[in-house]
Image 1 (tube, rainbow, N blue to C red):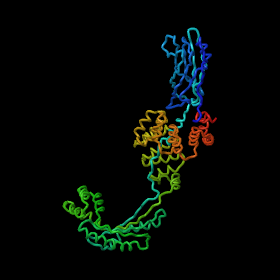
Image 2: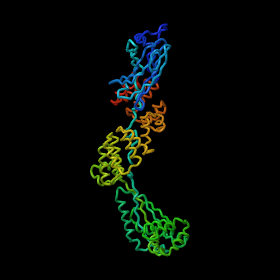
Image 3: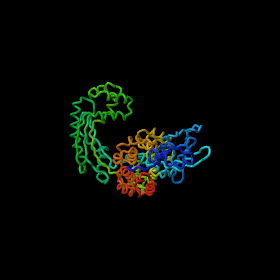
Length: 548
């Protein structure tokens, strides 16, 4: 802050030739003692107030036979807290206290207080009692410092501040739903048998086309004809055979789709169907199928592959009878896109017919309702019906965001998957329950998933540089706060999230106050004080002391 609050009392002892003759004289001239404090404005760091208080006793002030007891005291709204006193003695006192010579001295002592709520509006004072063999006199109280800065306590420890995120759903707004049928060819033939045009596969394909045309949720994006040859025989002959089959399959396609909507049709000849061969073998119960698949993976040359497989005389007949005939084919494919439930429909179904929703639909629907209770109800349904781990975890996130850490812990303890996100969430619960050591263990187990949470811990522990470094480049409340705490106000401004919420306005007011911009302080505090809590805080916040 531009303005320094003067926190010291100063006196200069008159240039007297004669030393104080008694404790009474020391009391009378006590206002000549200089008291300063570093920092000038007290600051709470990691729950404590530490400062250095420096007292300068002028020459001929401290009586040689006097003992001075100095007690640092913080006086705040609601009470006061005193430290153990420091003791000083004159040169003729035979004791073990720190000696103050007659020619004067400057002495610095540390003060340490645990923060108590209310200390943000406080002052530090020194209370002295001077004694000798005859007298005991209370010295005038000396104020050493005003206020206690508690800006770090604005850190957000909630789910947002610690980046406790929901597990994502895999809900698809549109789904590819292709339908297909096929015709089979005899070995070395490209002729389409009439029986193939009446096969169940073709009938199913025709029915699929009709259903697509009548279903308002389905859209035909186009059709494909794909022809193949089985991978036995010479490769060049199989390539030509596949090409011929593509032509005959196209003619057959025209017959079976007469009077049906097929969209734009593409025709493709693949040649030898090694991919299909591998798939059929893998799905079969052939005894040596793993060996066959290994052979396929070892050789890329089709001729070598065929030769190696034919060398397996024990299985080749099975392949020739059961697998290869299925690869002499032409495929008819209808590329169909299905329009899934819209957001509005999902919300409506939650109320009217929730049982039709699958796990992914329930997870998506929970993101579309606003009330926490409604989210929890949907997640509970997903857990009940599908044993959804994501729903179980997300339920805990709802509770965390509501500040209901008891139910959040219960929900997390019911999770079976204890991954990095789970550890981070458990850490946030522990942190907000005051279980700091437990929280740190969870955050350590969460690793990078707890980056934001660890930054919160660093702020709470006074490690401001670490927090600012960890959150550098991010736009969030805590990122901006961390930069304020390291006095990097340009970076703090850049890190402010883009929202009109009172808490962000409060940070803007602090930045403006530290940069001496009174108009911006006033404007931002006006927005911040829309929050009753922030309004009460601002009234006592030492950040704004010079603007009151």
